[in-house]
Image (cartoon, rainbow, N blue to C red; front, side, top):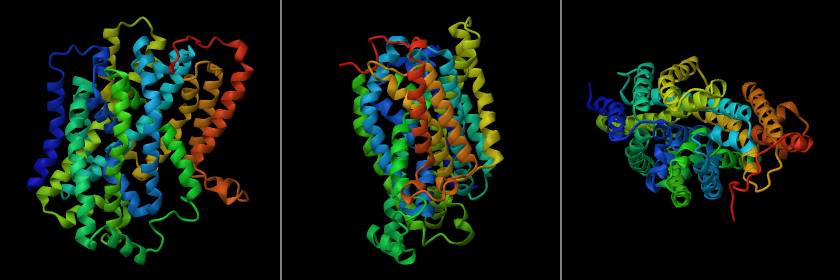
Length: 493
């Protein structure tokens, strides 16, 4: 066994150790387990938010998509910056409202805003489905990372099982506290590894970043710019808008907001977060550097190019450190996903049906549910699927259907009714699901529509339908519902 495997296995153990350590001196009640007692400062909020945004996709999917898709990958940097601007205004508002009403989940927010536990159930179901997709993405990435960086000694399936068991243990023990502390190590390592690789590979193989682009352009003309069809300018703009709006619709982004000590910590987080987007550029450089270095059957799975290029260039011990960093990149977001899914199922579905349960019973049920959620994630992981980039896009399109009801709820005088919100989410989600699962595009369904429209991201079309239906149904049901009109709505002067 080479020393690289030692590093890989070490990073499987570290989260469990940190989870045990981080719970010391704390009573793991519902609020501590799920939102850290609402006492986390700027650093932890930043790391938790980054931990959810920068995952195995940053480590593998970004470089793989640059290798396989070319210029369209730059949409990720654009929508991340747009989302940070949106978060500057919305996060403090969410925090004020959640603190006043003691909310612990995204579904709680919708339930309270629209005075409808059944809308809360719908939001919970949408969140659970999207989070399961993202959990699958993390497990798949974990399998790629460990199998390749261990030189096949640890198979993908075994690696996924080990990671799943480890993350389940530390989530049950420490909740959000373990995720926060593990994020510190994970983010330092990702920053160091991805930046180093993004500089080293272009210099090592081409003599620099500019010569790398020149070589790629010579071999594959116009590959690093947007194509005329498919993922073109229309797709790019619609995807940036859709993903920028939807980036913070993920249910796992709400607990870090709830956990903040004050509004200032959230605004600082929004200011710092665009800087984190720069890490993605270095991941892109790795993908572009691999285009002329990875050939044949090795290039069949683009998500693996960072790891394959690393094996080609470095000694096994350093490959092991890269693999260990990738393990943390999978386990930290997986921990938040497991915790959030458990919270949504128990707090926002089960408790609606069984409201008499005590907080202690609810907390215990949440923890015991985590292993079963892990098994569901494992089932879909082994069942098969598409690329990491493809899974990410489908999940984003689906979860963004919560956005219209969310943003309207921030208005001082929200005219949207629970019926409008419910109908919009249902239709938008159904449209995205049918189109995505059937691999349909607007160009296929409507072959004679203008090119400007045919390559729109289907998610933005569903979002438009969602918004129109939401407004129409709300106006028709305005006098038949009792939407919460409290003057303590989110955005205050």
